[in-house]
Image (spheres, rainbow, N blue to C red):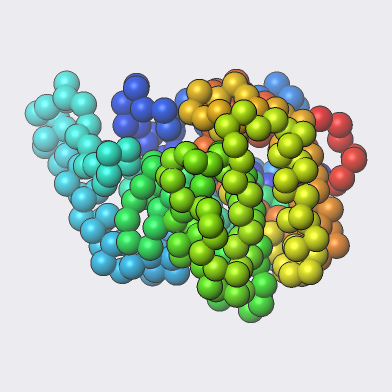
Length: 326
């Protein structure tokens, strides 16, 4: 197994309060399951480095990037204030009703975006390499000029365009199986023929987008509430022929696990075997098209036990096909 896991040191410090579903406990739950499954011992590990501000504009309006930095500064206490008001909780600058910044959030977001670029550098430096970015905040709802749905920067698009720019690639695929449509990703890459986006999502559902598709480089699979893994597998089957025709030189995955039957945020009925299956299918295509190079980035998943188990199944599927059972 050649999977390397990238983590951000501030991912568990980005905390918008005990009632916010996108919590530090998500990363702890993943690490617990990696340890108990034994995968932690066979994967490689690395700390993500914060992305350079200039690379954020691969996906975002420079004015939006500037506004995020400015609002993050408002959420930080000076050392004097932290001493004088040590009993106070961190202030939060809300970018939208769900997405906020406290004093560790900007660094966490920069590490989350940086992890994708770190993963690109590592995967492209060899063959038969896969990476998983266990970072937060997630990214696929962040649009060109706004935060949304827990997402500050669109990590997956930044990674895709970083690979295209820095490694001279011609074709990159993004596959998004989060239960929520990756509206930010679609908005930013629509019409960019260097990038194929394949996405599945519950529909109609938040963020109430994704069908019909907005451009010819988008393949969307809207799923009815209650959709089972069997139906999911049937519906996404056409992705694989399309990807083979596209011949990507790198596959990136927006890996959301909130389509799991136990997740409280949505109404699909996937289980761990379904995540193993789709991950294995993508690994087979990566072996055929791009020397096994895959980068997966964490998106949603809010039932902690289901999230951890699903990540384990996902990483097993991304390892050499059929070499490890789910």
